[in-house]
Image (tube, rainbow, N blue to C red):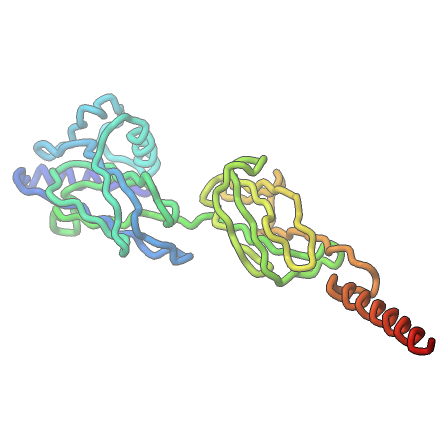
Length: 287
């Protein structure tokens, strides 16, 4: 079982003299996402949850009722539980945003333990909360200027493909769908466009999709589908998808046999009218 190395830092702090006056810093760097999403304007809240006093962690006032002992050996699952407990507390930390490179730095940081909590991921991926110690131990040195790389994970994707209801062949034409928060399609989220296929990043756990522009020659569908994510699995209208692909059917516009386009009707009527007029002119000339 993986152990958390906080206790190592505590032992070293007892052996090495702690430079109480030395201030540190925390630098957050976001890594590139699979979908090359923007790392800019991702907002974090940073709060000190414990001070480092004479080599021991002491809870700050807002967290003194947390039962877990920070100065004991902690397992990975205990650390995860601790982060969850801390996030449920009422506190006011410092809020910062990343630049276009996905970087933000906080200077003049007191020695202690800090909770780094993402409060707005903007256009980036899912980001996990984390705890960081200032200073932290790096091999043989205590590091007061800490750099952290928050863990991140991609969103689930739904690949929607348009197919002909009768032939089940793909329709490669301009289409448009709009996502909504409610099944009545009143609270709009975002509009998506594509050529026969649209990929949706499911930032929300549940949303409703409705076609707002049909392919050329097809009837606009009134179908509204419910898409949701449960335990990293995709569901459409309550049914689990085996893959992340969903086929959306469209029905062709009903046209008379032998007439492919509406404009052909007008051409035919024009020719008939011309024949009638020529016939009348001919009869008049004969008289």
